[in-house]
Image 1 (spheres, rainbow, N blue to C red):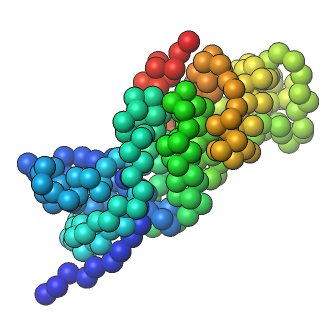
Image 2: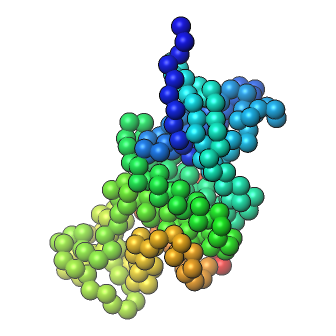
Image 3: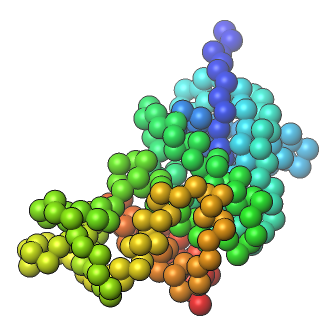
Length: 254
């Protein structure tokens, strides 16, 4: 009896070896769901899958239903994003983006805006100078948190809901509770001081298009601090660090 089939557009997030020649691919589907399937023989040099299902590539796939994992029958490359894989800076910056997407996406949980936003980020990274990759990564991570309902509160106190006035210097910020803390609430809301300028950068990245972010100028210290902010936020709300982000923070340190 023939297996039922279906098609999907997807972004490759991760590849895991299976047996001697196969791969398990973790992807983000166009509707925002996580899609996992087996590409048989994909590790053979002669396989057509090897060039069409690369990391960070977008593909149109034909899948057959399987007992545990579906099987890829055909794959057509839609967007290769080859410049990202060929550049150390870009590949290092894209890795935390893919790792976070693999963590927050789920089978059966649609979030199409997440897919569209990620494709825009990768397309911008593909054509932007290498030295813009870190800032684009930080922007994508922050936007991903926001699209998943985990946006930090950068202007309103998480304790009482009052607007926190912008001042020079530091601001009380609670990673556990979800954002800034006003002077009245700091006694009973666990928080730490972070630079006001850092939160202004985070707010800017959250509300700016990737094409415009690629035109911004940020020094290595700011970029490293933004990545550290994202990692702390990730640990507070998703439970464990992103290993690829730890590496990028080390890579990006001034």
